[in-house]
Image 1 (cartoon, rainbow, N blue to C red):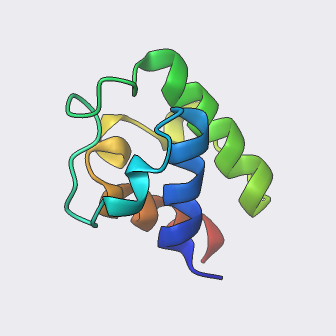
Image 2: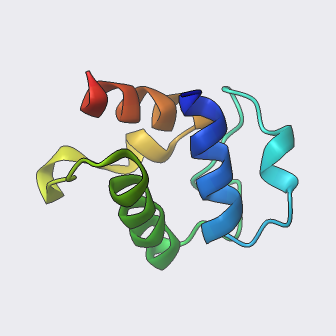
Length: 82
């Protein structure tokens, strides 16, 4: 499973980016840079990550740094799967 591509697919779906996420790189900024990623969208992304990857995210496990870039979000997922 390619975690980066899965994360990009989730971002594209939850944020209704219509394929824009496919051009995102690991250093692409998310929080504060992608207008669609507001607090409600963050919750949606977390829920979809939980469903897609089969893990649970506790409230104290995640903060804004996980959503700083595509790479930080991928690293968060990898950490949960590791």
